[in-house]
Image (cartoon, rainbow, N blue to C red; front, top):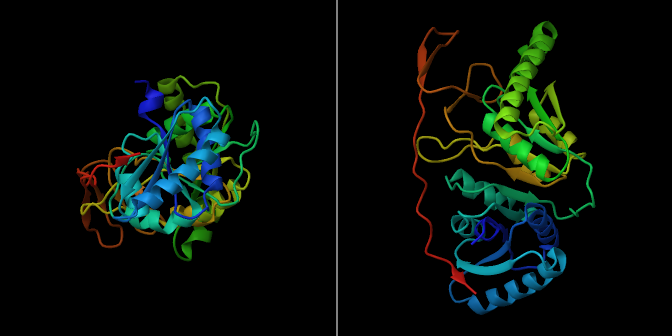
Length: 323
């Protein structure tokens, strides 16, 4: 069995007909990646016949959109729509959801459900032929973004377009404009240099030296900066936070705004491996700290230790029913 058959694009098919944009996006991605498509519908016990009808209709539309070269399969699972689909899609290259499922997705992911990249598609999205717009990557921590940068380079290369890497910084409270005036340019230059060093390491590792990349560091709200840039991008990539000690996952304002408001599809990539995230005094947004690094709180002189945590994902729900 080929990799294209074992790692398909999975589409969460809803009960209603609000699925056109999702099927368009999934079909385009399957053609670009040269992989199959799996349509999955989650239903309540005893509703199998209706689920079969939903999947038959979706499969007929998908065949027209994807063309004869894409292998299409269907599957129904019992359970909550988003949670059940994610729990049974561990082999997927990506899981594609519609915009209206954004709230259910956040609830599911914050409960600690991990898995493949998840794409959220706006209801009014439609594909463009030879789309010249770049892949947009939002970076939270320029010092620890190697995995995310490498994946973004690969995605841009597969889509035969450029990569736009953006990071926004600001400090909470009234000190932000003062800091911006005094050291804003130096801070932006330092963060840009960190991104550039990380990019060069990723190019060496992946061998993707021919992908055009634009690095940009801005002062301001990350959510506002990225939403503005997303209007001129073909897809927005964001990394996921690592699970906390209790297994839950935190999603900040930027990710929530992107899932609800982004004008282009949003893809949540896997979490960066390594250290946990720690909120530093005065900084708006968490930063990565390596395992067991000690720091001093400037206000009280107290010392805190950042630790890396291991976590085992929850067991998958009962097996799916292939139809």
